[in-house]
Length: 455
Image 1 (cartoon, rainbow, N blue to C red):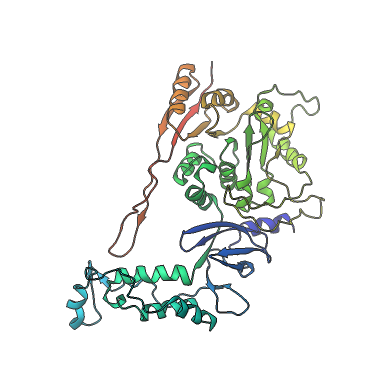
Image 2: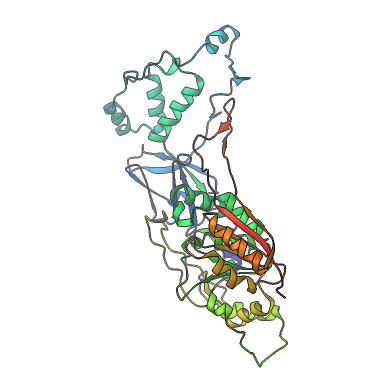
């Protein structure tokens, strides 16, 4: 596969074999990362179904679990029939009946007389199993449950819709194919494994990228201790231009597992490099050959030198981070060079390190909850070019306040401010728009500013 084909696939609206997807089961009740392949399996309840029908489908397609086949459960594309919302007859807060004669009865309907004593449903579990053995689909079971409910007709339209949705999630679960981008990945991790990403909320992530002025052809210095989410988000926004330098203390790089979920093309992965902070702070090595070589040629040469023939290893299932990568990518570079798919995060070449030491980085982003903020900023801020912005995330306020105070004393930056992002999610439905009852009340803090020349 050529690099052009790889780029087209990474930006395609259609899934392909080997791509990563985010499977949204029952409207956010369960979120699963998976790598599509004919052998991939998804467990819904106590049933395993193949993910092969998802290959070649557009992102955003909804599938429904079908258990009527004798060969076993399978996922089939869901085609909604008519209006799925049963509250279209609601207008101005009142229930509108189909005929004027029935309007008073509809308006007076409520749930006050209903008693939940588990006697309203006459259909037993054995009856449902008999229907399944006879090949009944999930929707047919739901309609049978509604027909055998003694209280369904007495409920309001809101309650009827809730009842139908509850039974649908149990007997006919649906799976939505979502594209794994920075927003969807951050939302999924924040909901299930927030500690893995340092409790970095999606609005905080977007604010970090904006405050650091991440734009095309920028060289971004990143300290990422949130699983690679920040590195992947920066690389995704750069779109194959500029560079992302993931720096780290010591000799062991930080984990970048989340980067592999982004479906980044080979061209974008080559723009993600790693370097230890000690290498960035070391003096620039003298190069006798071509001393007047410009930065553009240095960068173009360093790209070729960074290409190493390595295979993309298969990501294993890890209950700690909630990722289930099934299958392995098998992509190659053009026939002009015998390169295999470049793994994101190769070591930065000495040429490009020297160019950064001479010209400086475009901006700095730090998300390192386990490190001392001021120590990291004090060492890395001189690596930025003059007037370059920086943004630092931390879960707590005090480390950022201390860093801000020291930056003011040392006169290293101007425009310093600490921002606390706040996000409220709303339910928007007919006659029932309100904030969600359960929401995140905390999104961490961001210290931002502009680096100045120290005299």
